[in-house]
Image (cartoon, rainbow, N blue to C red; front, side, top):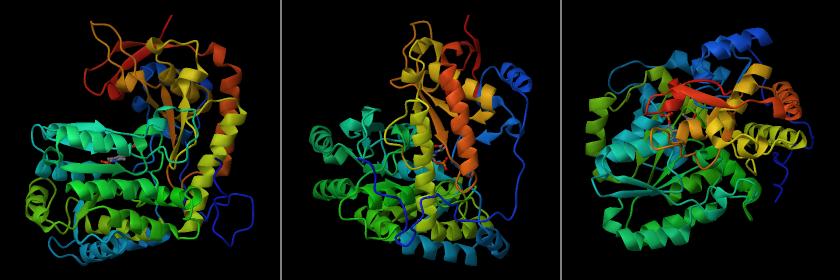
Length: 468
Ligand code: F0G
């Protein structure tokens, strides 16, 4: 494929330059190898149990971990904390309307609250929500409302080595087929997650987003976007999709929203906020039940579970995220890490997506059976050797254990998710150096066994030990 050079048109230099200078700094957690070995042992080889000040580079998630800009910090001071009708809400509403074109805008405390409100209104037992892929909390909220969540990713999304440009696409033929089989009346929603976090942070193409829109309209089914990483998706469209290179990322994002009837947004990603989200749509008939649910679970509709200052930070963040110097730096940094890992002989999900690089531990540690949790073993070794925290997306998170035997997850991945505007190129160079050492010594990496784990969401609290 390789993508066209990711840079704004007037930038002629090859070096990836961080498009900011630093005004305030935070120390990172240096520890010794011996300390990290003790910490791992004490944490039961579970990186969620390690205190953050013992982490050198934290790539656990890109959610809520962004560095806010000076303008966002300034906007916090402007926050109007009035219970009803705060000026901060009207500013927030204006920015969200300007970006998305949706008229009704409801703030929520984070993305999953928007999911809970929407699914609670539109889902009923027997209904099926169809998505390119549901994020875990989206699926859980669909199921909690009694409906079924059906994923229809493009077939190439499941081949981690295949470098297709738009592995976040939906399988349009599958969509037609399922609508006919299930019946449009039983499908309250078609959802496109951009980028597709569950399958490698891969973008959906504008062509595919348009195709979904046409099908949804023809069958009269509401069509929403899970927009957590909309700006990264829009910029990857600009880079990779024919005929889109001359448009601005903001224009492309606006078209993405225009194609759908509404969106769910976690502002903890592409709004550079540490907390927050919103639900936005045009259909007036959703407004009254959505407001009632919001008041019950979040707060009055002009603050929705957030402080006025959070609304200000999100509004400012949404204005900043489509800046192409930022998006170029963002996407090129991920690509730079991917190139370094390839050079070091570390297999990754190709091509790298917008917010993370996913390492294929099944291929990297091919001698470890899934039963030995190779992705968790790699994540722990990454911490032991380099003090870096990543997250396992494999058999610890999605495998099935118990008395009936062990069923592994389909993939054994380690996700290196990058907080926005936080780390620099030297942090990435360090990471590549650590991975080169891991690749050299990969034969010595030992598998893990579970000592105890709860049945629900085992990865957060499970205790493990080195397998003998
Ligand atoms: N949708 C997508 C695509 C997400 O990635 C997330 C969160 C949510 C919805 C839920 O948003 O956390 O604000 O409630 N993803 C985080 C992650 C947790 O680490 O990928 P939230």
